[in-house]
Image (cartoon, rainbow, N blue to C red; front, top):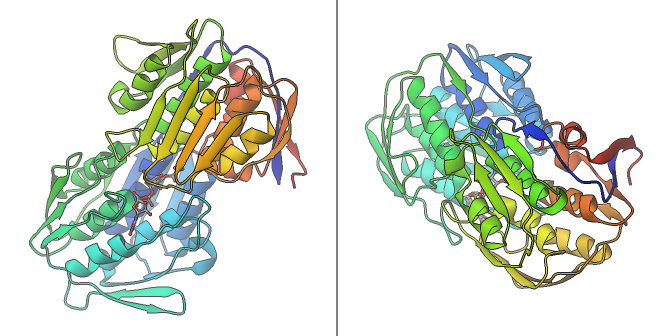
Length: 425
Ligand code: EPU
């Protein structure tokens, strides 16, 4: 197991490129199952989650080729059973469910296990699929999904207790593209990753309208064909480096290959905190410079276009050394505060209670051996370590490798002093 050693206190400068979005890539890769023709997907980040997804697709019978960010998949002959050994490694593997049942009329997919960021039920995924005619049976930890008479479009409201579901919307959209008739998803998730999946499916011949709004209309078609698609930039990776620029640079850092329209909540909170965020004219590059008098602010995570839960931990790390009191509430995953205990070990003053963290900014954090607990929590620890006095060891680096492509190399490019080493606990 790798660990990251971060020698704190260096000043970041220069520029980096953002990779393709992990969370857009995963359902798009799964959607390749919907056609027997070849699909070519560009800018797929080389992270362990996309690797798991490609392993699942191979196990399902797909031919997969991958070179420098481009993935070619042909799902000519596939089987409906997703193996537990692979599915259990990544929750997002449940997004093979919709495409398999749409293409083959049946699927067996293991129920994903627990998750450190909190309860992650799949009731809404199942609600969506059963509304369009799938019969679902849960046996020995597997879901057997069958649609012997095919799928039939209808109107489904996918709103859950914590709002819409991103992968649940994706799963239903992927199943409905080959259903008979029209499916309308009410209370759909409208994250940019859902829009990217809809664009991909439409380029294969699907008829989807309204992606990016709360109501998506899908007119079923008989079959889908091959396509070529470029994945959108990773807005969470971009936001993470924007926070790095505000926390650990002097004259700012420049971040290329971003989409301004996907970053509004991060921009708004960095500016409210007193930092300078300047986009180039094309909206595809941004320079973030620390403010002279940064101040804490309050954040409440909500579904898009609100502040993303996936950026909560990184902003919490920034607030740890921002003067004043900041209050961060996560309404989507109220238990997603594992990073706070580790930040406290580094000297932060944070109290968590019922889905809320109250952070009183301290002048300086100090290095400590810390443990990554999930993907975004690890990113928060890296940010804190850049700013801390001394050398921080971040153990269980595999969490960060799930979703940040070559993070150590990108940090080195910006002048950080980081090393990847073996032998984590
Ligand atoms: N929910 C239900 N029932 C369901 C599905 C979800 O109650 O059937 C609840 C969840 O427990 C949560 C809320 O609905 O409270 C939203 O969860 P959602 O289904 O939207 O999460 P997801 O689709 O499983 C994706 C991202 C997550 C991101 C969330 C929220 C991918 C691969 N994952 O998960 O990303 O946090 O949306 O935006 O797209 C990450 O990248 O670090 C990450 C965890």
